[in-house]
Image (cartoon, rainbow, N blue to C red; front, side, top):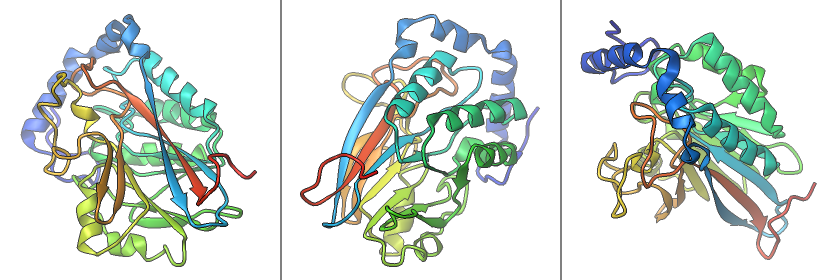
Length: 295
């Protein structure tokens, strides 16, 4: 029986440990993923497109984002195949990963599988943050696999892109649910960046930005799964006081625009309803420019 977090993540209750131990036993062999994988809907991964308009003279940039992959017994490999095929086809200059890479365990095997998929996208730059499910597991395996795949894992850090996109900064915040987001430290590296993108697992990271008065051009996150099992009228159960308001899609806040993904994979339930998986594509263009890269 699992009684506590295997990683540095907080908020892991004894009840959560009991539930995960029971699910681990019930889902042995990954049969839920195979059952869901036999349905046509397991291949239904949507693409969401957005545009960020920066100042004149900015070099156009393609950015793709995926979150909540949840490699494990409830996520069909077909769903992951489709999501990563869409990411690779977009040929992003920058791939952003929003955390929650696994469900239940971060075994070395899962971590290696994650690394292979990430490397296969072929992005010039890959940046990642961790989510609550990662921080409750042996997340060092995930961090090592992501690093081996060429990604940089950001924990309250800022990454300035290299030339010719050196006017763009990506701020990576720690998970607001189970980690310790520090926007002041993270934004310290922004400097004279002309476009600021924020990468975080959950929308509650907006609270850390607001507390420090930090502004951004786009904040991308996941975590909510769009409600996972929703209804035509909306999502009945969504975690978090911010997530309940900003469930998925694009939103405007005083600090900047927010784009929330429904994620790709599954946790307790292998199926989704009215909340199909998605990946996001963002074109960063100069004012009056076109949504193409300047490579």
